[in-house]
Length: 130
Image 1 (cartoon, rainbow, N blue to C red):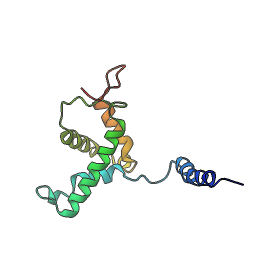
Image 2 (image 1 turned 60 degrees about the vertical axis):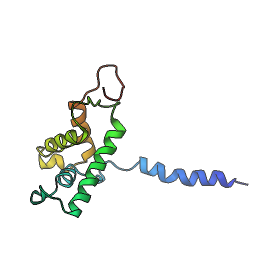
Image 3 (image 1 turned 135 degrees about the horizontal axis):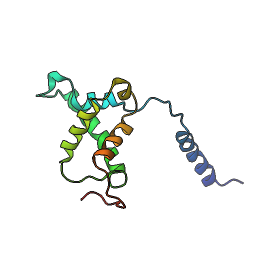
Image 4 (image 1 turned 90 degrees about the vertical axis):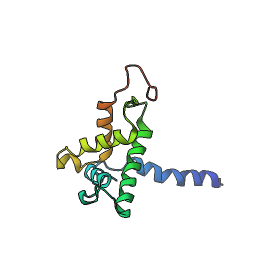
């Protein structure tokens, strides 16, 4: 007889294996343009964000925070020179300068590329900032 725990383990592993094998051409969860738009909001709300715009802004910040938490100290190293919200704004303003064809792609590699170029880790270092 097959043990129920083995069946459960196999059933739980199947969705994971298919998620890992997804085609690379799937639409990203967040494009570069969506990240820029959600972070900055519409120009007419520059001084005071609506509740909806604030929610989008928080979503974009959360996206950046997730990338930061997953990669800081391993793929880039924060120097402490800028406050995190200043770093995020500088990143978004740089992304906004990219051509539309680039911004239509996945935002995560664009963010990571900026962070790695702006905040490289010292050679042989894997520490979390200074």
